[in-house]
Length: 193
Image (tube, rainbow, N blue to C red):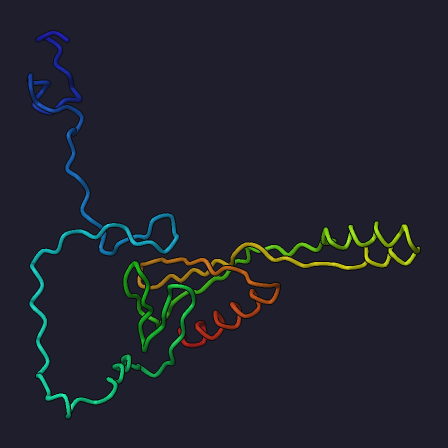
């Protein structure tokens, strides 16, 4: 470009050394919550805290004879709802606690998706027994009626509340795992109303 025709799109009319087209731009602010890596329930590295945390208060020391044999666990704050755990999602009181942060229980949207599959096949030992007993008698073919069911995969449970979203994977142990998870999700939905 020449001096007679300056760049109309540049700030400062194309002055040398000045950034053009709005570059460089500042880095975006950190999100208000820590997202998980790939939805696998592994929290992303946390941002450094703005202020150092206060030192924890030391409990008073009791003589050994006065100490109880066990210390009861503190009860979670209850806001009229029970407790429930699905994978790494926990409902305690009126909060949903996930690795990516806490969410309000009221108005939460729950979803479950079945990514499992159940296969039925003839096990290899049944095939061997059928061949061996076919030679001696024709009843060996009855071993081919043996079936083996194997379930693989997982069930994905997602929750969305308060502008946050979290999903977890629950491994499928057998064909009835999805029905069990749906029962838990329906209970969580009833508490979210």
